[in-house]
Image (cartoon, rainbow, N blue to C red; front, side, top):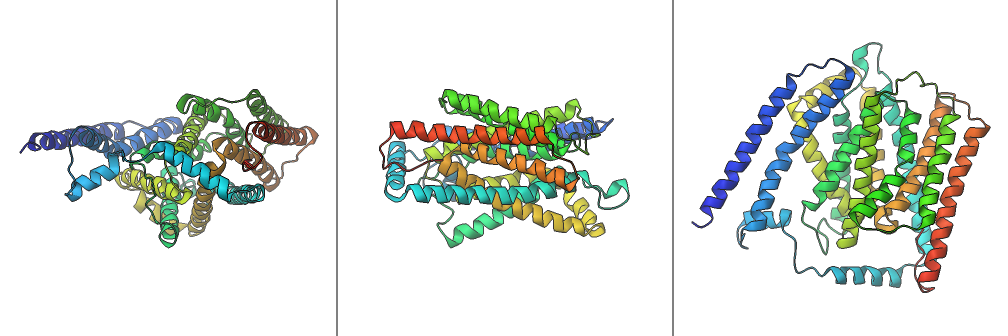
Length: 431
């Protein structure tokens, strides 16, 4: 009887929230799409309201689980604890000690170097293929008419995350299992999940406004917001050389882009594209930093991180896709242009494999090293794009690439030198 009123208040809050969101959706749907620009931001608003249908009820459930005693017997109580309640029996300091002990006892210079090369090669292969297919799907038509160009970026995000969910779940069941030794409440993943969805949507959508090399150039600047996010969220301190080399990477890529003749230079670089790229940089930087924080605070494996974030991403995106009838529209498009299905499979598989390498790299080497690796990939993506569209790479453009690599290896050299002075010689090498 004591829980009757709190439960009634909970369900009333959820019901009112859902009704309010549906009313807002009906208002947004009636907004006229005057131009492509307003259409894109209208779509973003519609997608966001679709996410709210899951996130807002989740917030009310979180408040309920936080302020009321849930008990231990019922299935509902166990589910709410799994979703929202921190396990107070977890000793954070012990997690850190266990992590350090495991690393010190099992890792070595050669093993860490091999792991780095494995992650480096996997990220390059996965995302170079992904970049080529992504550019094709968002910038080219599958037929002769305007309707033969696929424009539903939200569906591409869903396909990528859906396959990642299936693959990561299959691998987990065959290995360590979905549950971790020191699991975080599931809602902790929602922050990086939402930012990951937004970053993916922004980079797909931005290709409607800016050329592919322009988008890649913007991505090379990501190392700077990643450092800022690390400082704001985790209170990290960076050395002087880290700031200098970050700026050096950006300058080198800027020189390469400026002196590269781009066949897609007729694509309008408008304010909408710039805003989308800024949204990508901010959200993607937050994603990497928050994931690094979860890896530090809890004993979560890369596969478990992939599964949790991919599952939540699939759940959030499926709601807005169902409301907009995107599943039926995509099926009709595939029926008319079967080659699109092949590109979807290649894009999703490369993205899913890339996700595994992303979380492996972040958990082992941290978000900054991951960003450096992806910066190299971005340089290679520009080269591939230039070769594919027959863009010549001149001396100054090549000099820009060389400058990027000099900055990267300077950063790695300084990092190793700094660590060798602060830690014992048996401490494992971290790239």
